[in-house]
Amino acid sequence: MTAVASKAYYRLIQPNIYARNGLVPESGFHARYVGNQNTVQAFRRKCFLSWSQWRRLYTDSVAGSVARLRVQMHTGYGAKRLRFKLGCGRDNSGAGLATDPRVSILIYDGVTSTTKEAHLGTTPATATGGAPDAPNDITWRSLSFDVDPATTYEIYIATVDYGRVLCVGGWEEASDIVDGSVDYMNDEVVTAGGIIVDSMRARTLQGLSQLWRRNGSHLLTYPGRGDGTGITTNSTTWKNALDTSITTVGSSTPGFYIGDNGAPSMEPWTRLSDGKVLDVVLAVYASTTAGSTGEVRLQDGSGTRCSITGIGSAADWYVTNTTISNTDTLAKLDLQARTSDATKTLTFHAASLYCYLA
Amino acid sequence: MAAGASRKLLVRPWYRSFDGTSATITVSLCQSAPVGDSVGNDDDTAPSHTFPGRSSSASWTTSSTTWGAGAQAELDFAAIDPDDGFGYVVIELSTKAETRGLCMCQAGPYEQ
Image (cartoon, rainbow over all chains, first blue to last red; front, side, top):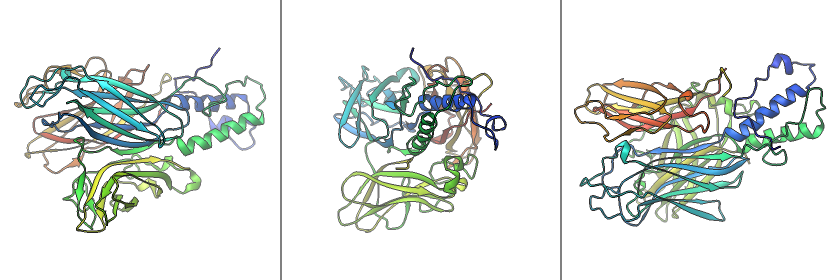
């Protein structure tokens, strides 16, 4: 019989029972932490995209294919699929031109690209100048892609033939099959009084280490404005990348909370031995005019938390493996950008931040 | 989740009043997508949509025209379908409210 990971949260591991000095690990302890690890592997997966159009763009429907959103993410061990849930609107061009409105998603692992389309099957809105986008006008579609674990993916979401995407969520899924030979799942074979052999302990500890490195949270996604255009700046001083009229970080400047001075704290995301330093990847989709370089950073009230330099003239993902220090004091993070030459233009499209240790 | 366990979705909206009068934003975690044939009315009457099934909501009100984050609120994951773990986050605005979405949307820890 195939064993399946329990969807219910497993049982607490009481330190007074199992982990005091002098206590010898026994089968009950092993069963609990193995069961917990299997549950985490099967069901606690990354969400890497949660986006909605916060304003009604009545000129949103256009002919042809328009790249709307971009994300970069890293699949954890055990990942089998990326799944997307799309909320799509009707053709609101007012001209009633759509014949096959759809949303296209492309994923790329650095070698192979895969594209799928969600055909909306909707009729153009009759209202001139804009669809109402009432709940009953929204078409919900799902797309999923088979993926490899521990792999970095670029994701591109486009609209085709007057298709409109109003909101989209993206997350990874894993198998709940407990196969102790793959994905750092652990066979639940120990019974009361059974022997915990070295290979069991080795696999569990190796798995914990690898899950730490690759299955950490996806922390932040700014997938773009949603209309296909980037945000531009000619400034050699830092500007808020979401609103380039802003140069400082303040409580009213647009940004992101991934921690808030300890409520919640990002410190539990770090190992005790790391001293509150979190290993992350910052990825930015941007470009600059040839002859200049661009920079993007995440800044809060206490300073720069992480940054990326060397953005060149090719519109592409620029990626850096970096760290965030003092994770217990993270406040609202603002994305800021600048260019090295005030006569050149930096075009910023998207940014992703995720936990990762090679 | 096991009996007695709970988990919360931590949310903070990024919002303001665009004319200095009272503005309210409501964020809901819902089992199903909302249904209805209207997104609301300019005279601030109740929107003609409903949430089938379970939901968990929090509201914030301000008269400030300065952008800012609402205080952190917790939405109960018990509102969504426990079998597939899928739900919808819905943002509703009163007539005077303006938003750029959620500046925080995090799944909190399991609690027993």
